[in-house]
Image (cartoon, rainbow, N blue to C red; front, side):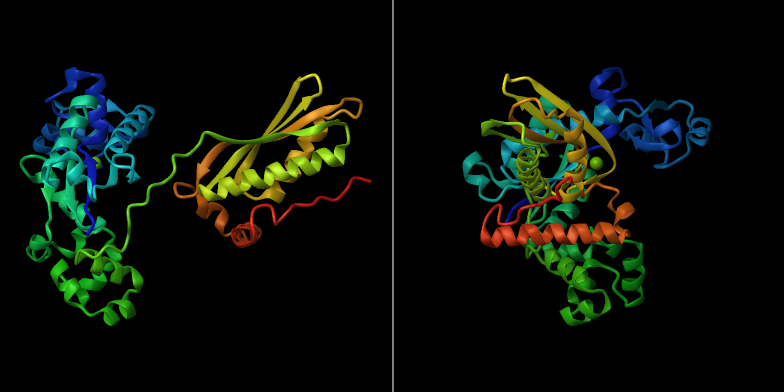
Length: 389
Ligand SMILES: [Mg+2]
């Protein structure tokens, strides 16, 4: 039996502005989108006043001149978001950052550690985030992510900002939950379900698996079972993204043999790419380092037009960089690769490249490398190169 919490920061952008500028507290504050286009975050007071989410600024300021309008500062929000997530990681080793202001926290088994029941534990976490970071959060707790998400919606409107959907409560909650309020059900699915007479979460779980599978697919089945309290989607604790990946080691001899150096470099490129793919990232900056016998470091880097995690692509660029810094008259002791400016595939504009056939072939080939090495051990695959004539 799992216990999962969804921690959701209240009016996050406004809360960040109020944290750094306390004069804004308890006032009708609205944060505007880039270039002050429209309202993207509202304080409680602004909501009560009637300012609408997404309302264009020029209309809002006429209709609600007494509200305070603030330009957005996404750098600030990202920084505070990281502080919140790091604090949550103090409570549980299993934290999945879902968005800038939301995270799933696996609380399973922590009841004993904190000597509190789960509702009190959620209250405790909420107080800690408020007291230490001055950011208000709502917390929903239940046995699956989908239910925790529902619980957090209820927590927001409730008294103390926390809400628990226990197994005993599931049935009642599902009966009171409209289909469009369920996490993962968008506009199209809502239309499809409503046509089939499915209006509430209770209606959805009453449908049999084969109907859902046939009409919608596995996605609907997953939602059904999550709503019933059976975990399908676990809390996935992503490794924190490193800022860059560096791979280097000494040759064990001094050499000015370019082919030898290229081979060494390829070895490092391969292991850097393996790491990159393991954390599901791509790099946009490639750097090559040479260290001379006298410990002098020579470095050259290049910014790519599109990020990559494919060794052959990186190796081509790295060899060009190597040529720029290499001299046949110098003895070297080591070489290394630095992959910088990393992008997570999850957040990325992946679709931009995905149509590209060449790109998808590279992805497939990389996956092949990784699978082979998973089976037969690291470096079973080595990347060769064509010797310069
Ligand atoms: Mg929020």
